Length: 124
Image (tube, rainbow, N blue to C red; front, side, top):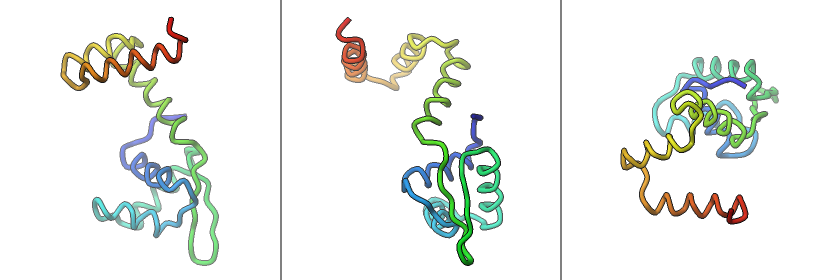
């Protein structure tokens, strides 16, 4: 798996959100809600996603349809792992500390994290 450029990630988010096969026009319609997309550029990016192994595609009549081959959870796990290694030298403690110091997370978030850890480790 490889890290996706921002625009390709944006396309994948649309497909993951529907959790279904989508046509080029359906994808464009959703993407156009945030900003206008050129059909040719979209088609190029969809083809790149096929080449990268993120999508499969088939043609039916005049329409081309796309299905995600990689689950959103799998990609986000990959991306989060890259971020943790690159920015925080693989230290979750450093990540949480920096988020807390920047006030990006609250004491309540830390309490939720403690509960999560206790749940996953059986309270140890």
